[in-house]
Length: 296
Image 1 (cartoon, rainbow, N blue to C red):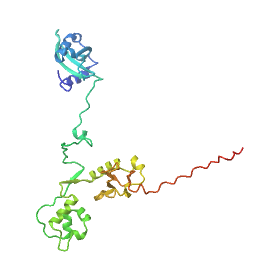
Image 2 (tube, rainbow, N blue to C red; image 1 turned 135 degrees about the vertical axis):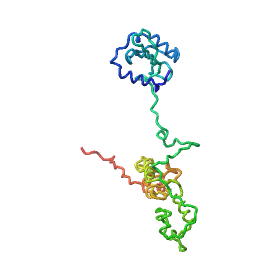
Image 3 (cartoon, helix red, strand yellow; image 1 turned 180 degrees about the vertical axis):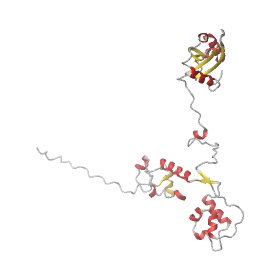
């Protein structure tokens, strides 16, 4: 017995090309008992069902199809190919394979693990390797241990990166005694994440922002029914970096977003000022005159 992806696929492809154009050889078509015996030898008598039909694969080459009774192989068929040499009277066995029928139960197409992986699949003890060409990451800047020679303030800022020059005041970047020492530059680089081998790329940053806004953004049902947005909530912890103007972290233990990154336009009923916000003005109840008579 051969699997479905064995050389039987070659026979099946060849048979599909000639099927319908070749009349089944009569002697090969009559060799049902020979074909059944071959199928029962491969799978066992109890796993071979009724004879389904005969197909002509080539001149004097015929395939007999039998019902498959193997558990889990619904719609599959035992295909036994027999052949007869030219001017020969004896039919010989070619091969026996298990092939899917038109209504066979098939396994889904194989997908690589990195395409099957979904958020939340990573569990304790699991290791998730990150590809070297991951678009979400880009090379970082490492500050060495060697002593830095005195340089101009502009050169010192360049060693740390443009982000460091923007994040730190000029007085801290260039103290009165000269340029920052190695320890000061290293501490600043650690704070900015520049000593990591790889840091978040712009693509990774935008991808994360899109995910966060989809789950905790202004278009969610919770935000639509909230009394106010997170930008005015006292439980909001602002982020650092370029996302600080769009996102923060919720620190309200009663909020469904507690501990999650939320959009500043998100909101929920746990807003810190929900209790003191003015209630909407309700219209006065209608006045009904129950004493007078309706005009006729």
